[in-house]
Amino acid sequence: MQNDGVLTEREAGAHVAELRSRVVLARDAINASDKSIYATGLLAMKTALKTGKPISGSAGEAFKGELSDLLELRKATLFKDTSYRRIADLSGAEAFATMQYMPTVLKKISV
Image 1 (tube, rainbow, N blue to C red):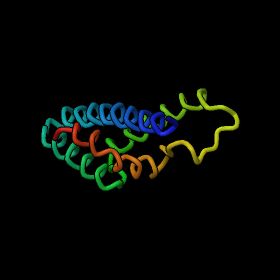
Image 2: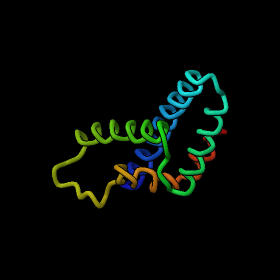
Image 3: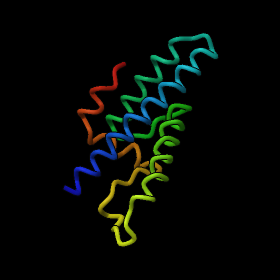
Image 4: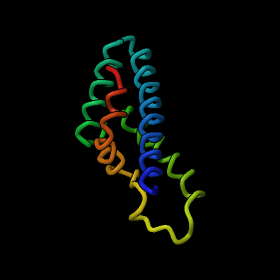
């Protein structure tokens, strides 16, 4: 039962972070009047997430920023005696490394 919460949190994090990254990529492409920025960035994001590597550039910063917001919300839901070994590490480089273990979610990221 405890694992279900971790998976749900990771899935939610992946979805909202992906959406935020898409918005940033779209803005970058519009500002540069170059639609290939969006397509290339999206492909790089999907590749990075599948391999557990950090996403580079503004999309990566947006992804981390969205997960950071999720972590802030998480703090209010933890009991004082909750072991940090029992929850997913969604901070720093671990935020990207943990995403590679969700192939179903990654399949939904269309390029």
